[in-house]
Image (cartoon, rainbow, N blue to C red):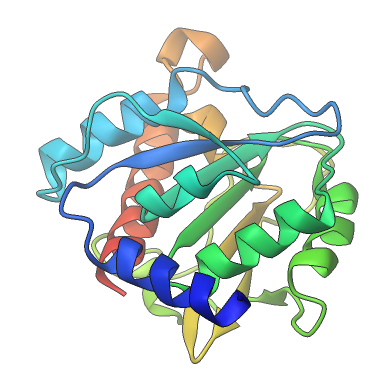
Length: 213
């Protein structure tokens, strides 16, 4: 049954013609809905600058729903607790192994909970730090030092972690960077234009990598 589900999921994802992205809704009490202006702004930036044709309004999908297979790119964020049932974890694993891509942006405070839940999704894989030489940092815009720092929280350096399958990055976890805050409307966090531009350009790199790999 699992092999059959994987076959149909692969067929579904690989035959999507539209470019759509979705926000992942999860349980546990974390604010999965944080940064409401972030993805619309990133979509607008990508459509104007890297020749994507993404639907302007991102949809919301639940971890355990078959609807996730309609989207080649899923974004997840929040500040606090994350919880997946085993069924949800299995669904997310099938999605990722079928060609899907998840970007998880720690808005602050979700990291310890997320690591625990990702062990349910991939008990046989670990998050590994992504080298600044990875193509992710130069698909469209050059980031020779790797992930940019957008917001300061605990004085730690920004880090990009990933889970790989057959040499392809299938899950990206951005930590101590807070890209999503940089994507939001300028008056939300009062970031400077250079800082917002860095965040949007890095987001565009992520989108482009996910759509082309």
